Image (spheres, one colour):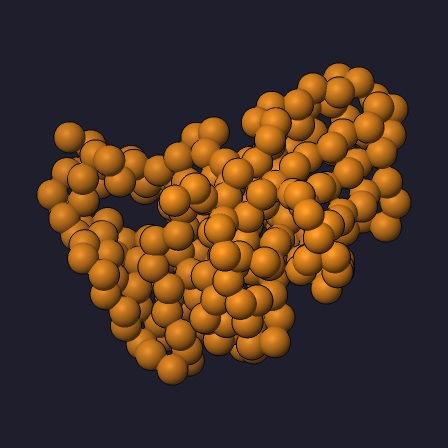
Length: 112
Length: 116
């Protein structure tokens, strides 16, 4: 039962342009979402999070948008840089629980 | 400021052997989580522990897998009588308060288990 879905396995973007990574979820009990970035042979690195009481959270080049009615969130990276090339995972969690539910990831390639 | 540490980074076992994976949480964190990532999949939750207690093991296979987080020392994920299907990357994460929503989990580099 895949409660968090990332339907685009890969995305290629030119350096300097915007990268938009999408994520959908089915569990309406999720009230906190996180994005992680993962390089090969390393663990996921926390990027940015958002609470369900917000619809936007921004940190430098990274912005996460949450649309609760559509059960959809997206991560915007602008401007994209070659060092952003990695696999990006979104995850959801609900209050009172401790396990993160991860999507299957989107591999972002930023072309110099 | 050391992050989450896991060892070994790579572990090769033959079918039927035991695998022991270790995880030391970030300084100041007393909540530990284990996740498994099979090839081409996302991370799947296995178990959540606090010091000396298993809080949630709903993602752990019922047989052959066990986890502990003793008062002293690292958390251990133990897999007995490994089979080829256990080959995966095992990630440990730690957090400060275990509050779930709002409590960010920070991940270690993972242990890549290969079962021959």
